[in-house]
Image (cartoon, rainbow, N blue to C red):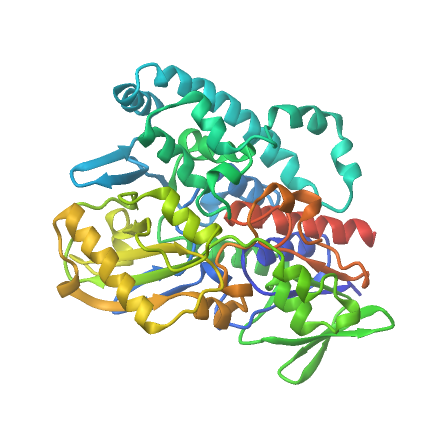
Length: 490
C-alpha cells in the first residue's frame, strides 16, 4: 500500500507538491479550508464578471512550461497564453505616461529618447540580469536551504560573485542609468519583495530580465486557469481534493506526525506537507514542543507588503487604461518608507490597476469593464471600513485625473479586500499578501526551514519558506519540498 501524504492547502505550492508526490507513487490528499482551490489565486464571479482574486501578472513563462513538462504535458494542454503588447502602462503624471512595448528595440528607442546612450546600456544591463536569471532560477531557487553545503556546488559558488548579493538593486540600476523614469521603471518589479530598492540585493535584477526579455503574458480566461490546469493534472495523477476542510490540529505521537484533525475528526497520514501559512501552522496547529520557531522569532521577521484591493464591475468601457497600469504619479520613496520603515497607512500611495477585459472579453459582460485596483500597504496595520472608503476615493480620483474618465457613477459591482480578509481566508501572518521580505538576511538557508526539525515527517512549502514569494517561486517551492520528502524517505 502506498504511503499517504496530507497536503494542507491548495495554493500553487501545495498543488505543485501534490502533483510531484503523486507522480512518485504517494497517495496524496489535499485539504483546503475554502470552498475552491487556488489559495490567494482563487476566483469569484458576480454580476457576470469573473475576478481573479490575487496574482494577475504572468511572468517567467519558462517556469510554467518546465512544471508541466515534467508530467509529459504542455501549458497549452490546459490554457492558452497571449503575450501582451504593450506589456503595461506606467502613469507618471497628467499627460505623462509610458507604454512599455514588448519589442526590445522599441523599448530601447524610448530609453534613448529619455537618456542618450541608455539603449546600449540596457543591452548590457539585460545581459547581466539574464545571467542572474539563469543562475537564480535554475540553481539557487532549487536549493532546499537545509545546509550551507548546498552552496558548495562550484558553478553556483562561482556565480555568486556575479550575482551582486551585497550590492543593492538601487545602486546597481543607477550604475547604468540616470533618468528618473528609467530608474523607476526598473525598480518597480521589486516593490513587492519586501524592502526598499536600496535594501534589496541586486540579484533581483533577474526580475527585469523576466519583465523585459521574457515578457508579460496572459492566460485566456484569467489566472485561475493555471489553478484549474494544476488541479486537473493532480486529479489525473490520483490526487484527492477535499474542500471546506479546515485543519484544526496536526496530530503527533512518539515524535511523529500521525495525521490531522479536521472537523473534529482524525485523518491519518504518514506525512504532512503544510502549504498553509507557516506561522499559523506552527503557532496554532502544532504544540509548542514541536515548533521550529517561537512567536519571538516570527515577530522579528521582515514581511513583504499586504495590500488593499478593490474588485469593480463597470457599466461601460473605460478609455485610458491598458490591461496592466502602474500609477507612479506619487513619490516612490515616501510610499516605500511608509510600507517598510515606518509602517502606516500611506499618505499618497502608488497603486496598480488591472483591466483584463481589455484583453479578454470573457471576464466581463459585453460593453462593460472588469477592473482590479491594488494598493501595497504595510502588513499588520489596523484595517477598518473607513480606511477602505477613504482610499477608494483617493485612487478613483487619480484614475479620473489621468484618464479623464469618472468610473464612480458606473459601478455595478464593488468588493474590497484587505488585511482582515487575508487573515480570515488564509490565516495570513499580520495579514501579509506576499510572504517574507526578500532581504539578504532572509534568503536561502536564512528563511524558515522547509523541514520540521523535531518531527521527521512534517514539511513546509509556500511563500514563507524557500525560495520565496511569487507564483513561479511557489511552483518551485512545491517541487523542492516534494523532492526532499521523497529523498528523505526513499
